[in-house]
Length: 298
Image 1 (cartoon, helix red, strand yellow):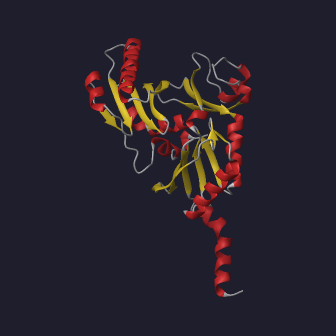
Image 2 (cartoon, rainbow, N blue to C red):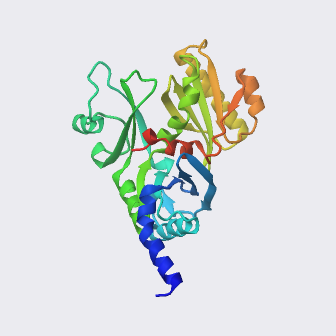
Image 3 (cartoon, rainbow, N blue to C red):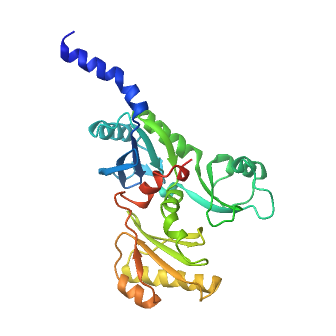
């Protein structure tokens, strides 16, 4: 064995030790349109190095359809960036995830809320039964300890992505829900608002504009906006009018915007509120930022 082979052999033997002593992580946002990701180590965020579009129907309704090509692509990207030994924290495609706010009311909050929900089997209006669901339950900052955010997806979706990452040869640390990540990333902003403030978060996604309404840290609803700019503005105004009827017109209103939106000035004038841009930099998105917060992922 020559010197170069010996050095290569030593490096290969040291890789597991280095991984344990200096853990690297990859933040990866999965969407039906593509993959976006960046490295993360010791609290430092690397620039976006993964930003890859995907062919149509590679992922359908959040489910990986082309498992082997996806696995090869992810593996190749991580090898390219020297991150194949890193721990991957991935956010599921948003279209695959449903969420509900669970209010335990006067009842004692169970230690294992997921098990309690499976046992009680409440009607949550999900498109599948809880027996088919993978569930994640997180406390909500504004819930007084009684409200929790339940994020669910079909179990087969989780199993499909585990298979993809296994075939890619990666260390999959966890699969998170994008809504949970987004709320975790906004925690500091939400805590600084007046009690009772009505928050409208506008997010630019690859499939269009999305609105999420939040009050006292508790999400109220999520809504996709129309494609046309004037129709988007009208829909935001309609949602704000609904919120003000529901909670009172005197409640302060906060408009948060992640990304770029047309006719922002017209919207500001119509609602009498300035839009507050949300810049998650150096993270690529609020979802990627939330992935870096341990409490945001199962």
